[in-house]
Amino acid sequence: MGKIAAPDEVLYHIGISAQMIKGAKYALLPGDPGRVEALAKALGPAEPVGCHREYTSWLSQVEGEAVLVCSTGMGGPSVAIGMEELACIGIENFIRVGTTGSIQEKVALGDIVINKAAVRLDGTSQHYAPTAFPAVASLELTYALQQAAKDLEVPYHTGISVSSDTFWPGQERYDSFTGYVRKTLQGSLKEWQALGALNYEMETATLFVVAQSFGLKAASICGVVAKRTDSEQVAPADTYRLASERFQLVAKRALQDLIKAGK
Image (cartoon, rainbow, N blue to C red; front, side):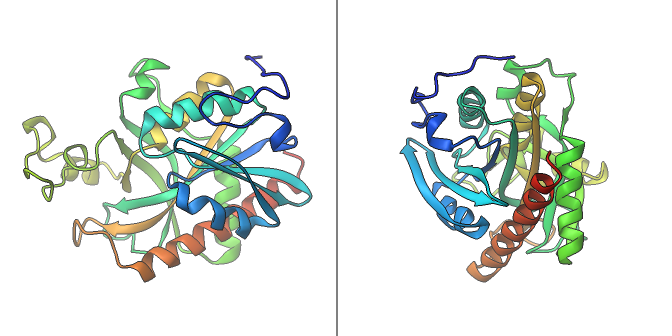
């Protein structure tokens, strides 16, 4: 058992305490603080509980149980900090809910990607486990997300993410300020495509490794808002809304099923 904070102790970074989350064991983790309120309200009755730095938190209700929605900001370092403190106040299950760019032709804009594992192109996870250690999701949480998507007839794909610490060079994007990508990363997009990876994003590898190192559970579901086989540009607002609606519906159904099953 890891460190458990006193019930009324407000944790330094996330700005909330165990008392404030009313026994929640599940946390949905969007990156964008601006996405928290809508996601929490999509689950059920919801109220704000904290806002400090990149960590905006709302508490919602699913099947009569409290579920926390807490933003993490972008990238692995803030994900790990948030997870450290959330674990100390009683969270046991972490589900990343975000956006992503697909790198396979079959994965369309607006589709859902459920990652079962991630390529560790981040630096944060290496502070928790050696590079040879795999970044893998909880089978139980991942299956619940898959089954929810299937039941709701939401188009989804399950596979491996490439988690990069950078949005431009690590994802071999050339539309940056300089257009420069290091030689070691040039051609990497084609390599990941050839290996069957589905998508690029920036948090999942850290999420999976940190959760595993804690003996806790993690999963990841993302809506596709960029299709790299067509363009490096992010899709228009209507596609973003469609992806958001879909991952909200799938996450809610998965939580309902898990909570009903007492998991």
